[in-house]
Each structure stands twice: as structure tokens, then as C-alpha cells.
Length: 193
Image (cartoon, rainbow, N blue to C red; front, side):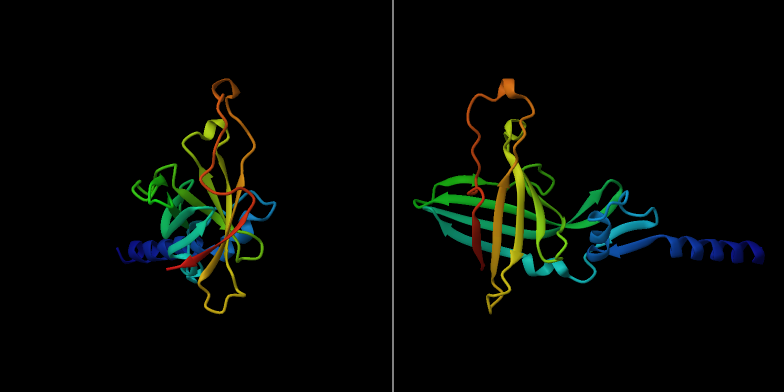
């Protein structure tokens, strides 16, 4: 019986040495490389160094007669079958009269209309986010990059850039022009509330 317990302890120790949760920064080296993705021993990608924390909170901007409000939270998503910490961005856009033009703040976190983080770019400061609108099959999708403006002494400004997608999945169904909730190819500066 003693031998069985010792073998069990050794087996668990070996398994625990192989199974590993890695940081976002370490995972980023795999995401940006030419390799096949994360190694088999990785069991999770966590924000161990709290790198995402500077993005968390409510950010606002008044631009072109519209009020933009972003609510950014950290969320544990699944990357295939591996838990992965990402940012979620919910938005609410109103006109000057307070009329709501677009609002994803009331949607559940798993809604495809919620912007979802992917990974940091090679500078480990610029974060890539995916956007899919309700008419994504007609090209209403794109990428968003966000980063904290390090030139701002208070650290309360975030740069936001929306780049629309250019593919249409089914052109037969796409007769009306596609609109986007954010200005395209414009660097916007949001302020943390």
C-alpha cells in the first residue's frame, strides 16, 4: 500500500510539473510567433502580472455630436479548451439629446456583439480586440486596438482605433450599406471616469 501511495504522489508531481498556467506576456510570444500555437503543457493563460488592469473601468468620449461610453472588464474566456484571461468591451453610444444609438452594456458577456480581446501586439502595450456587429455577414466587423497614452501624466487616457473588416460573407443578402458604431480609421482619445 505504501508503494502505491508513493507512486501516486510521484505521478501527480510529474503531471503538475508538465501542466502549466502561463502569463499573458508569455502566451503572447506564442501568439505572435510562427509556431503552431501554445505548447501542449499549457493549461491556462492568466493575467498573472495584472497587465490588463490599467484598461479596466468606464471610459468616455464626446465626438462628432455623440457620447461614447466604454465599459471594460476582465473575463475568463476559453481558447479552444484552455482558460484565457481577456478584456471585454461593452459600449453605449448616445446622441446629444441622450437618445441611445447603440448599446451592448445590457447584453450578456458571451454575446457575439460584445467586443472581445485577443492578445497584445509585439510592444506588449497595444491590445487587439475583435468587433462583430449584428450585420457581420455583410462586413460589419473589424479590429480595434487600444493602448494607454503614456504621454498623459495622469494615465487616464486611452487611445482607441477602429479598423473595419473588408470581407462580405454573402453578397446576395447585402444590399444596404453597412454602418459602424465607431469612426473608422480615426484615433480617438477616451478618458477614464
